[in-house]
Length: 391
Image (cartoon, rainbow, N blue to C red):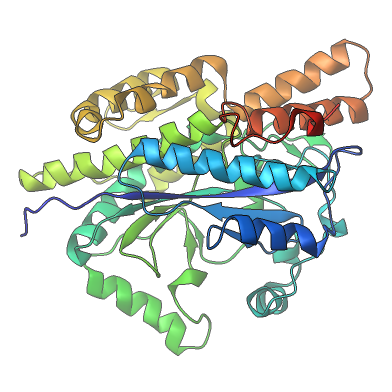
């Protein structure tokens, strides 16, 4: 067994929704010039998504979380600046508070046309956005071993990111309704466990040889070995509205991977728990976010999320120090105390109703807050012009 430490470099992908600054509804048919200008300003860092109202960005391979934050700030600020010239704004939220999925148009590209044909109405309803975090682990055997163990922590990461409490104008009662929508897709949810890289490849190849999928990019588990890079790709997260929340979650995921590597180096490993039990914590995170609790399987009882977070921070303290990102991971405490985007969206809605606004106006106020928070904390040289902010 190689004891050489992986690079654990990190990359972050985020998906945003484009909204009209006047109506606050989604831009179902944004002008082609918007994407052209974004691609010119951010070569190889921005791409269209399945729906035309969406836009995706991705950082380069980053050695530090400071670099990742700087790049993500630049990406958010550039998209916001270009969009403002067209009367639009990006929001980093996993669902839009009131938009209708049936009114959206999908992007006319071969890959997306094929998905529309294959998956039909299920994919037409995918009016959702997420955040994906890649952590580089070059060794194939190590990557699969850590992949199996990291599944335990996926609900804990989801809880910190929830940003989808509304669906088509309704308060869902869930902090991450996005997962309910995404669960309708095939090959989603918690991943399987595999004894080796070979078993994983053989499993994927069954579907490839059967002509069901072209490659592993069509496997959309909450965590997967990337089909394009030597990385583990964490996909369970909602997109974080606040930039610093996104960096905190990426930092924790990276540190968890290194913590498990340290255990392996000492011939130890994280205890295996059934997918059934982890699925229950996944549901609790989806339902309550960071404001509820999860099951401590060792104690067989539900524990407040704040306590579980402190245990995680203790587990990864050495790794956070190694990467120089202790402040980033400890920002998770602020997420718990101040609430996730979902908590703030619901509070904004209820406060607006209490002030005498009707539900439609209250939902518009939620969108306004999302527009503001998406570029919150972005340096002036990356931020859109003040005059372009929503009124």
